[in-house]
Image (cartoon, rainbow, N blue to C red; front, side):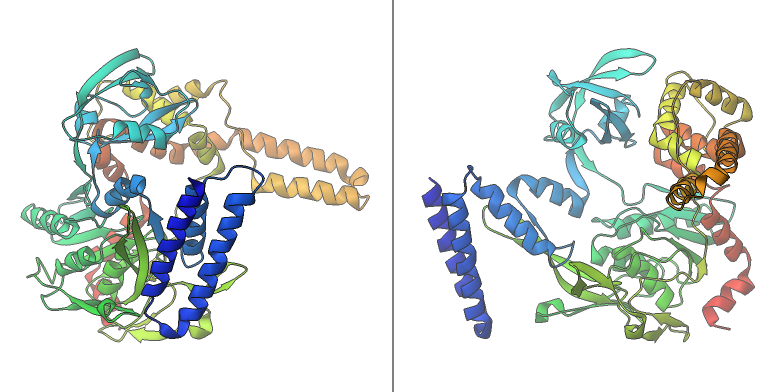
Length: 545
């Protein structure tokens, strides 16, 4: 059987080699394919242990593609469903995300309006069984495979709800289409916010409908939130910009090796509003299609960008269907936004020690927006107004990493039936005292940078024979640090309360809560509101005055 598989593989390789168009490269390609087949044959027939031909080839394929860039990938027939979800945002299932927690998997996020949420499956529910099969020891990926299935088929979950007990939930799977716009709403009487998290089909339509609805509610200014949005379909990015710019506006060009990859994309539809003041929020997680939207808005001087520099992905991928129901996503072009710049930050063609290098400053070029504002290529999209990233304290990070925030919110939801709407809900100091009581006896130890530095200093002082003379001071300093750490939870009380507020509110109000509870403590939103209220400053930035 092994030999037959090998011969089949050699024939396929031979056919592939004959199909290559570049005649000048034919000998080099044929030679290396022959070397590869020879190596494969020797390993397959002579290696001391049994090898699995399919796995061996898969590793070779993955290694070959990874040497190009992280975005060129091969998908087996079994992985086709996952890839389809990446592209379409649609799958058959219960409408919830899960994560591993100890020996089991817990519900991380039920999507509002889908089967899991309708069946009252809650965040924090522990999944014990799926259709009678024990879920103990399964990771989140394995369990997700069990939860997925054809729409209309039934699934029974045995869950353990903390503080309440075990129960069975039987309901039907559905076709799940995750929204690209999980939230839109009014921040104040005149300002609306649209949260965009994906670029799957209909993203442009969802943004358009959200803006139209908010305008009916009296919106006169708009914030488009692209933070953490890793991108998706290029044409949906064009459709989203189209909401704010005239029909026929050039948004992006793609340039590749093949003629078919050289394209110009212009807006095709009448806009919703070309004059409404617009702020776009971006950060380091805004990539690809998000950068087409934000970069185009900047290049066209249509709005102001607030936040932090974007990821810097200026590459375009295309899908290729291969034999045996496999697929391949391959980088075929780079894209260029209206000013003519490409924002790709990493150079995969010139690697050092196997890693892509950041485009050198000496190679970057200056381009200009419609109003002659200078912008750079090769570094992502730089916001017009930079806002320092909000960083959590060590104690907050430890509380989250140890699941104390998550578990307390779970307990709270299973005890309290209802809370105020997200805009009005506030986690009080009395609530915080209850949280401190909950933490009694629980571990949330962490090491600060100061402690690490002190340990290093002790180590060096011992090597250099100074420690004996300063040991008393060192121990006193350690004690002082420990004393200050014990007070950290009170020092950072406001920050911890805000995290708890969001975590608890999302148990009742889902995506809406995750956005609306941040209105009063999100520095990016605060800066966006400030610039939108100051029309003189807003216009001065755009007019390059």
